[in-house]
Image 1 (tube, rainbow, N blue to C red):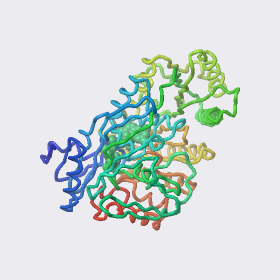
Image 2: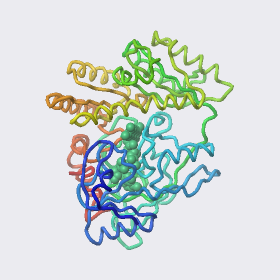
Image 3: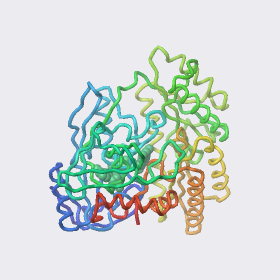
Image 4: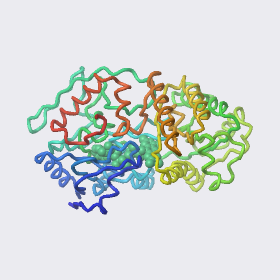
Length: 492
Ligand SMILES: Cc1cc2nc3c(=O)[nH]c(=O)nc-3n(C[C@H](O)[C@H](O)[C@H](O)COP(=O)(O)OP(=O)(O)OC[C@H]3O[C@@H](n4cnc5c(N)ncnc54)[C@H](O)[C@@H]3O)c2cc1C
């Protein structure tokens, strides 16, 4: 096991992509699962608080420690098995997402939920129940987790499988560990969240499997060390389209209609319809303007852009492209300037386009002394358009520097405000607060995919109420009676 304590050596571990800065005494880097068990037992016996680290790409300060030690999963990076009979892959938690994606692509498979940040670890993806662009068609990481091996805070290594009997049949959950210790908790009744994505707090639903509670628990209940995941064969062909709009409202109407047609096609209720997007992503004008230099072909009179992808079989190519062009031309006068990706090199260029926007935003942030104020909000599709337009009106009036992009297929947006002075910072916080509270009031969530971490704890209480948050905390203490793991994540 590698142990680091020199500040120069551990500096990189004391922050994440939110830019929050923390502190810890030591960083433990176990080289295998036995060593991670040993490490956690040591913390338990010596009452040492510890935080688990994946790739550090989180945006809510979850892996940033403020006391005790940090345990990095980076050496648990082995892909252990691939089974083409049942389409599963067995991995350790520290496998970098990009490595897994490349490995699977070589075998003709893919893991559908794809967070944009491919430097994240699979364990981090599971701990955050990450999603991404393809979640529109394929759901979230949760839908692909079949088995988990978890080290509980007492140091016990426990395996959970979807096909065993660890299911919450009534509202009570009961688990007896091999040590004789009993974990027992009630499932509280959570307010209904009317969105297609939500990662706020613990996943607690009647009929859930116990492994579900670890997915999205953000490193507060146990340390995920190994997982068996369901993977799918790669589609034969994928077409990508980046569509430019001269009018914002029309782009939102296009998204609403594309969402409707695509959902119908998934349900196979509309045989004639050829539009079946697997992702629908949006970029506002300010985001596009960050790319003018790298992508001079962006039409200068665009007010925003939408990126879609659709899977198809080779014999359908012309039909599908015709259907898309006809659909697009109903909503924008810039239809002729739509970019099309069919070959791998073109798809890679689209991915660069997508990834460059947050990269450019981080560059601006790193040059200011202020933190980026970033949201991760989702509301119901029926109210999304009005919600978005109202937000933009307020932002325009405020004169703040802002960028919006997001997974609009899931009615999910990321607002990024970068204040330039203290006055802007306080105005930005005010607008941000209002934007999130409004979403929650309308049955939405403040956390569609990034989680709560240490930066969004107050919204957990606003969304679910004090009583539910107390019940979630009581569940945490069932797993972690000494409250050593991931202190400060989710709960104050
Ligand atoms: C540019 C950019 C784009 C992004 N796009 C997306 C996106 O499209 N969708 C999305 O969902 N997210 C996105 N993210 C957020 C981030 O990439 C994901 O949340 C990712 O899953 C975090 O993984 P990680 O390994 O980096 O975790 P870390 O940041 O290291 O940790 C995140 C949390 O998980 C816990 N944790 C990590 N590993 C384990 C483990 N093995 N066991 C228990 N707990 C653990 C940590 O304690 C922490 O609380 C993006 C981030 C960036 C910077």
